Image (spheres, helix red, strand yellow):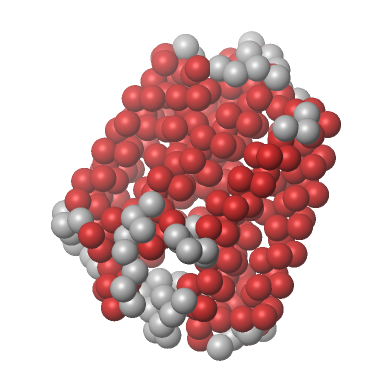
Length: 295
């Protein structure tokens, strides 16, 4: 594969993109359950979520390079700009281009939700960039996990549901926090892996601030809270559906046990496993609701 193309693919962080998809799938599961599913806005929400995550990943790579928070040979995935595979200008332009695509997608959603969604879109775009840029980068002030809960959980789940149902739902709101906590665990793994690199460049994350044992503990607590928050929704489905959250907790336990035995780049597979586990969790939530409402 061409080196430049490979660098762009790595910059997208494909193994983390299931995080965006999971939130939309969970929301659609609730829409299917109450008969409010609408295919077009659901698909547009999925596209919007993916574009925003890719833009955030691009912005993170660009602004971390500009701020000197990246260094060659880091434990995490290869950073194209830092390693010289991509120019900073190209990454900046790519960030702007993807944000424009997301903006166009978001504007189309005002057809269903109204013009107030423009304000929400602006907040989302600010969050995507402010994660690693500006006078108070969230990623360097121990706020990365909170940002994930808000922008990869609460916002996409509640809005995807609302744009189809045109109403709010308490169970959906609880599920949005649950999905956010699952997504935050991806960052828990990411920052746990990067402790040495982040300390070397003065980057402050929860992983560099708290004791080492706190990150695996946070991971399992997040997983348990996520399951508990969605338990009312699971209990409204056939009892066999409870196998899904049970399996998710088993997977989370196995990942935490692995966290205690490996360090550095050896944690990379766990990052992908964490993203995929929440994707599979949300996918089965949707599929079971489809089956339950079809028969």
